[in-house]
Image (cartoon, rainbow, N blue to C red; front, side, top):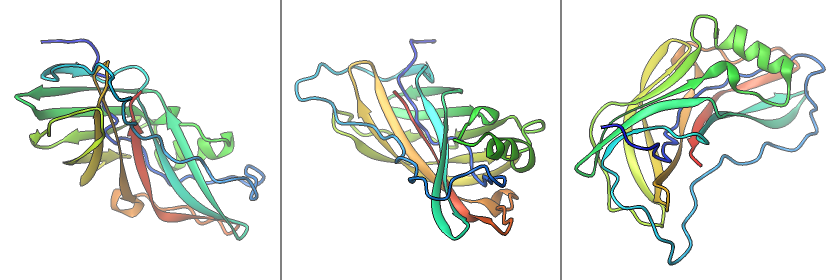
Length: 217
């Protein structure tokens, strides 16, 4: 049965990456990227939503993105990109997460550098061939009793990046809200596990691992 959008899923989804900067595209002295968004505890006395059983779609306002460390001209920099182009579906039955799939439009993930983003889309992720990244839950997950205080839910699934699929585990932070349920989480990613070579162009070097993350609103 189709229900209203569940303010759900920040099931970590997306992208990786190996971003690189073109020459002159990035300022080595800029501040690090802000931390990834996470779910928040609800105010005391807030009237929270009731049942969560049903078939849901990922709601508008959900986001997904990546964080990765770079060394640019000897300076350590953290790069982050986030997109709201996230879709997917979730099925909850008897208090258990029976299935979930989240799909992210890889080409829509921006950073502060158009030159870097173009390299990411074309040379790293090959969005012409692999336009999306996905996270799929691979087995039923029993959900704890949810309240206005975030709880941690371990989830096993599959992450697909640039056409390569690997099994992953992630600890989701879940909280009940007046509108439904908010979820956030991040997945550590080793790029070479997905046949992605981290760029090393001399003046800029990207770490061989990063995180992909998501958070609902």
